[in-house]
Image (cartoon, rainbow, N blue to C red):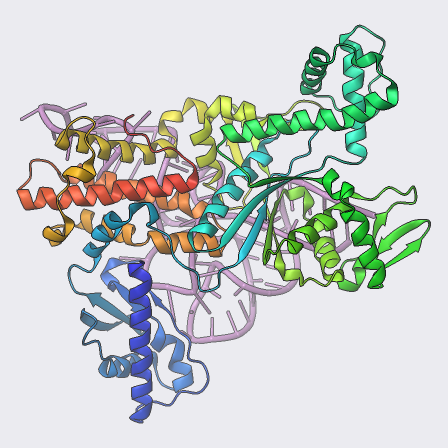
Length: 563
RNA sequence: GGCCCCGUAGCUCAGUGGAUAGAGCGCCGACCUCCUAAGUCGGGCGCGCAGGUUCGAUUCCUGCCGGGGCCA
């Protein structure tokens, strides 16, 4: 249950009733506009909740905001709600002050069901497929992939937490020209390793990882180079990308990112789904032949020009396979598709949506979230990330250098559409002061208090006082109040993160929660106080610990018991 | 030339149609006889510029300037 949401809804209802009563009594007349908000004011001095109703409706009521606010206050019936005081303030806000103790209810609420605190049930649950990373199977993942992996992973958890049915997927581009090129490069490296004359294909892959794959292949198939060339090439086109994908999967596993499904492009081709899309376009009169190629009339749906589906040499484009993939997603029954793409793909959004519209799907069922660049530096010097040049920092390098927790947390401290500067040397050198440790430390500190109170290895749940038998209103200091208010806000923060596709909100929530706990901890003792104070503070610490654990868990970051 | 993102404190970045705009880092100073100092407390006249919408704009719209990116 969500205390904030419940209060907002109840207050809003009461205000609407006051409006109706005022109208019935002839005190005001409203034309049209009736929408207003109930919010938690930024300043505690402005009450527990406030509404801009009088400001928003003054025009429609043809009165001054403060006059309307006064009428509303007089007509309000808050009898059963437990509102202690109402005031008109500033330009016409109505501020509500609740009875003491409303905040403290959050403690038993959290303790009763800690693993589900923050969850809610959206009014419009959807079946959502979220696709992300989807790096090429021709090399290791880079830092933008690393960013996408965390963003997608955490967004998926946020969406699930508010009641959507969520599946995650990684699309493997294991067909087409780049795979041919990759296979040819691997073959050349095999020759090199055998000391045979070799020639790297033009535009071939330069990375050291290709040599590594060649080494592994030769170890498993020592006679590979003696195979019949066609058979060898066919084998490499399959085997080489498969090995890269296996490595990607292992790297992501280490990164705590798991996908419900790894979807292979070549399966689409083999199942005939690519051809089927072409046929469907023909049937719908959306495609045409010109210059020996098959074109899709995406320009009818807002694209700047039509796009090629099948090139004049008969080879299907990546675009076509991509459409077939998205159609397949819809056919599997998903209401909404969320794709997370890198900054270099923004030009593809319009044509992809157009292609889906041409198939008869509403364009807004596909949502593309564009990530912005990650700029890597090391000691202030830019680190180049060109795959062609063969020098780039991989996900694996990143995890080796800064660790999983710090990497995940850092990527979650930026909104999707912000460029991200990531200085590796700084992240290592200052690891002690990384925000992730600040948050984890708050958790470890609480664990330590419980060890002190209940003994090493004891389960706090077995020893804590019963929240129903404890007077929690002794938690009345500013620091305790601030902490409680932030605990109460967790469910709405998760909801915002999900609805607005802004997983970074979790990181900022976690930092703020840790900050408020540290402040509380520095100003007050928990153990050794008067028994009723100690009991209440132990419960407050417990609620904080559980919420920290919960938010860190949603971020895929560990919550250590000691540091 | 078209399109996308960004412009908030020294740096990296959050944030909101509302009442006194924040954090981390860096810098200066103070605090461990007291549950972990990976901590706390104090030190900050910053929303690129100009119009517009609005009772109210840092937030929304337009133009300009600056940075980054994609495409032709």
